[in-house]
Amino acid sequence: MRSYDLMCRKMAEELDAVVISVDYRLAPEAVFPDQYHDALAAARAFLSEDVARRYGLDRERLCVSGDSSGGNLAAAVAQELGSDDSVTARFKAQALIYPVLQALDFHTPSYQQNRAVPILFRPVMARFWLLYLGADPSLAPALLANNHSTPGQPDLGPDVRSRLDWTALLPAERKKGFRPVVAETGSPGLLARVPALLDARAAPLLAEREVLRKTPDAYVLTCEFDVLRDDGLMYAQRLRQAGVRVTSDHYDDGFHGCLSFAHLPVLSAVGRRALDNFVRWLDRNL
Image 1 (cartoon, one colour):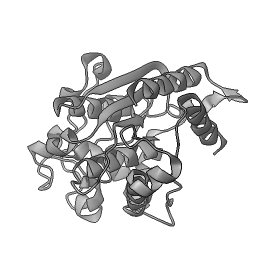
Image 2 (image 1 turned 135 degrees about the vertical axis):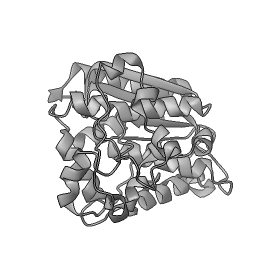
Image 3 (image 1 turned 120 degrees about the horizontal axis):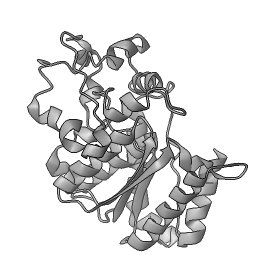
């Protein structure tokens, strides 16, 4: 985890900020919603008056952030706390770095384009989702075939489908001529076996518009060569439609995990550039 330590140190030093990194429990020993509850508990503590007083925090300038699966948790926490009237302080910003946000469509253009691109392969994502949700790993082929999101699924009405309809949510240059993949028969009972696939705490892209509306200003970083690219782009668009101010920071030469390669001995030019721009955005928006 040295790259994350260096990233947090860079933010703390350049922003003169307090940075707290959450050591949430991991699968397979812990499965959803354990990780969500860990992140939410840490966020509630971070927003409290006692913690602010102890660390000298400015409670008007707080941000929740994460990358990849951490971006998933950050988005879910921002949704929960944005709708919680009991909190006495709120996040000013949410910063999501190539977040994973849905598991109903494994054939978005970015999943099709980058299915075999390192470091995050398409079959690996299906396996990771089932591991995170504590589901049977043998279901991976069904997920990869979109057998769980076929027409006629009783829990997948038009409103839910519209929340991840990439044909409407993505700009033309990201669609690149790809076509939706919709299984005709599928596996009707699959969603019942893995109900968390429809839980917005696990898949924040599925949240209702009213929930999104109450979340803070957003920074969403996406990379061209990443199966998760379209998750982030769709979420940025849905936030905009809900009235949230969004900065979408896309890297045409970026790849999943590139910020972890922003330091020696493994240094990536796009990773360094993306990290510098991320820290610059925080400096200007907190």
